[in-house]
Length: 583
Image (cartoon, rainbow, N blue to C red; front, top):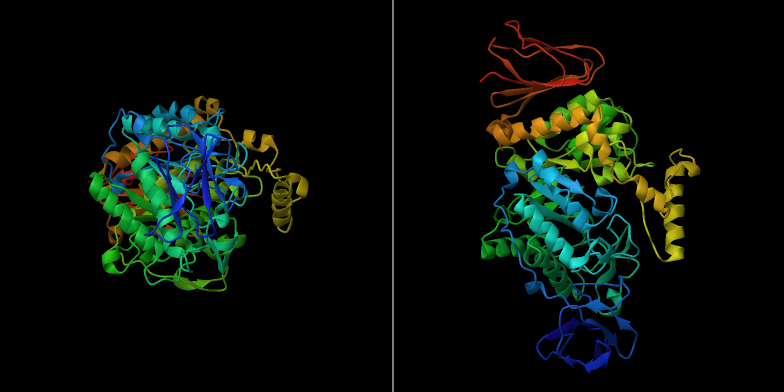
């Protein structure tokens, strides 16, 4: 077996230690900084690299870390797994995503336990499960955004074989799998990359310290490292797509950006395999060039999260106005209407939160709606609140039904956060399991200090290191059988079925969406083809002038409601939603 490692930091020698035996490595004559050795090895064999007689370090391209980020690497034979199911052919245009954290989706917190529950999601009508990051990190429980070894799977979740079983099970049920990957930072704990080469650079600084080296000397190899990792998920694990964390934090000044290189490599792999692979970016830039094809001068990412829609919807539902919600809270229904029709609320307009102009307009005539994801809740928007409270903690079932209606009938690709479909009562809090006591204490203090500045008492902030914080965040499936959760679940199931059967709800034409609203009356209505969707967020019945032709009929409604008469007025009960058709 060929072992190879990029280690330009090594001055004189690199040694492969395999199953306790040492094997000197040779410099690669054709690739600067690379070292190679050939040695017999089989699946599961442990190994590592020593640079200039230093300590044994895990392989930067390790496929498995059975003893955690600081332990030996292990050989993985990807060809040994026998796949049972072919990947389904699914289009992003008709997708319905479900964001899932393996460690809290079930009490067991493993990939196998999550796979056993995939039938529930298939029955709900979900087309793609989006897994939060799976790369190894210290301890057992965490969000996964401080992972290392971007080729490996967190061992407490089940390791590489369990991920293959999960993907295989999802494909067998006709669902795709998307994996959240983090390219903007690694670690800090268990991150041994700086010992090998210039994986990071002080040329740029990020919230996590030195930036990943995408444009300084040595960046060619770093880019290849990250792209190789991305392709490995798609090829070796048959993952269908990748969600790219915080691409706005990728410091990159090169003329041809890392994201362009990545999207081109993914498109080439898709063509080679005869499958559809896609990339979904998380971006704070409100810049449509992120998802514009490379042939049109864009980065070629296939879709992106749209936080502007979330923020507008959140303020309309809750009335909150702190932080970045301030820009949306002045006229939340107007903001919501704009994000339903023009995608970004900030499209070159002034942001009071940023104290500058922000964003760029979307060309609705040339930009299909499936390039954007719409959602009411995500791991970020719940877990980064002080107590990890979901919308269900403060909103009525009716308002939760309105939120679901706007997400699942709107023009963007809808995404739910796990448990949202039944209005889960469990919080989803920020939790860690750092094994470094100093790092654990720093995270604990930082979390408390951050929210104390916003008026929270320190004793009310959950301790990220306390196992109870993770335990509180585990879904309670017994809620699904009880009111009002069972009614919300049925509503989500019905809306998803409508989206999958009514072509107007997946029409990619953004310019065809028409919206009317009343800020004071707290109602909003919009048209999708022959369908009209209306929500009343107020506490009183709303009279909504639909301009009916007298032939409207109710498709479905959260509360009993009559179709409008020839006067065109719809009387919509408080905190409820309705879908009508005039076709």
